[in-house]
Length: 161
Image (cartoon, rainbow, N blue to C red; front, side):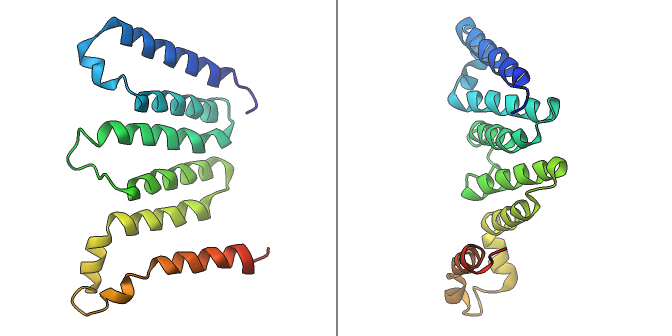
């Protein structure tokens, strides 16, 4: 990080406000005095560092930490919010895509994670839409993770660019 005064300032203000409000015993805010709130504070500090100080590589951890913190707050409060590994991968994809906007790096990873998140989040709908369950193709469909393993091996061992 180039200029860390923004990051340090947001961390200190955020943690100070968090602990001050916690000591104030405001009953409406009691459910928010948990570790996901601290993740959100740290994530917001990274985002301010990324966008405010033009240290664009701080966007990736900022979006991931803020997104994970928000997920852990929302998952038990909203019935429609998915409690699935796909949501974590979606947050990571969003982080790569937002970083790509500023640095022009990470587009491939963002799209790859976006496709993976879509497959995981909508697996049941995709399987029904493709008719895999009725056509007896469901057994080979169980081996789709092998495609990821083969693609990863290709990038690690074969493509030496």
